Structure formats: C-alpha cells, structure tokens
Image (cartoon, rainbow, N blue to C red):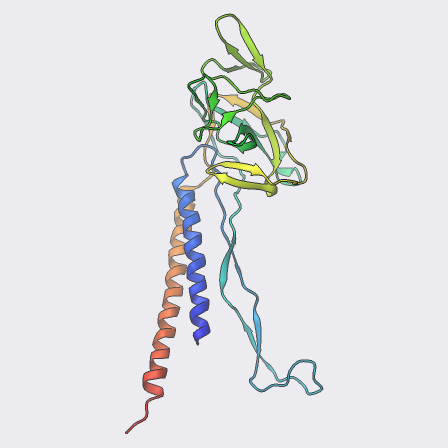
Length: 273
C-alpha cells in the first residue's frame, strides 16, 4: 500500500515536468523559428511478483503461480524538439530572413535540418531558425539574444545591418555609399537534429564528435520573411488540460491510499474493550 503512494507521487512529478514543457511551448507560440518540445514519459522497470513463500527461482521445486507485474512509477524521459517547418509570414523588413527547405527534405535520412549560423559568446557556432535579426551599434547583424550573424565562406565574416540585401543568387550585398561589397551569403548549415543540444529559446549547438557534423545547406534564404513557431496553440491547450487531469488522477490515488491506511490503522487494528 505504501508503494502506491510512491508510484502516484512519481506520476505527479512527471506530469508537473510535462506541464512546464507544454507551458513553455504555449508561451513561445509567437516566437519566430521556435520548435516545440515534445515531452515523453516512460515507466520504471516492472517487478514480477510471486506469492509469499514460493520457492526461489533456480531451485528444484516448482515455482508458485505469479501474482503479476508491479509498475514502479513514471518519469520524464526526454523532450526533444519537433523540427517541422512553421508557416512563413511576410514582414518586408530588411533584417528578417526565413529558410525554405529544399525539395525532398522530409525524406532525407538522419533527420537533417537547415539553420542560420551565429557566433556564440565563446566563439562557437550556434544554430537557429529564428531569422529576426537586429542591427547592432557597430552596424552588424545580431540575433535577439545578442549572437552575431555569420556569413558563408571560410572566414565566416559578420553580416552588416541595415543596408544588407540578397540578390537572385543568394549573395549578400552591403552598400556603404562607395559601391557594393559582396559577402558569400548568410551562413546556412545542415545539422543532424538528433545530435543537437538546446542552448536557449530556439538556439542549438552540435554535440561534440557527432556523426555528420555541420555542412553547407541547400536551403533557400528569403529576405523580408519570417518563419513562425510550429506550435499549435489549440492542440497545446488540449495537452495542458490532459496534463492537469492526469495530475489530478494521481492526487486521487494518493487520497484513496491515505484513507485506506487511516482505516487500517484506526479501525481494523482497533482492539474492542
């Protein structure tokens, strides 16, 4: 009976963690390029119970009939992001960019996704689908979190801001009044999604030593557009309701076990005078 309290409590803890993830998805439903996290629950290993006093396994005596399996509770296993593309919205803003996956992307093995490459605080390459860039005080493009936007090419130079424009070939031009300076284009890289670690809201880093690594992408870059979040607010609200009901069900289990223990201690075990 005491074990039932622990099983129900583990379910409440798992549902609480699931609620946090679903709520975070709902909060970021309007965040450009955000990919919703999908929480998954798993059970602990089951125990197979046998009748008290039955001979141990491996002895010459036959085993007594089993009582059945006993589940030891649930836990939050993982919450990987779902990298399905979000809808594109035209903003006509010069510093907004969106990625359009090449044909056949969904059928490519290994779960490869295209990302903008930005420079992290320690000089490492970070990946994001959020193309809502801003112009910093030095005239360069940054993400909303302050990461510098990188250009394609071996030196990965930083993209300047307000005068940036893409031509038909995808090359990036910046105008300083004396002519056009051409960069190689925005750095867009393909990465295996199974090897990505989340570093913040919509920012990822490749796991060191991951197979495949980062390679130049064939995804198309569109200026003046933003990819919206792939979170469905209606479906997410349904998930939130499901989480609350599951949490309440575990609460009722604890309440029932507590009432049963109260009767066991105070009524069944009472000695009549």
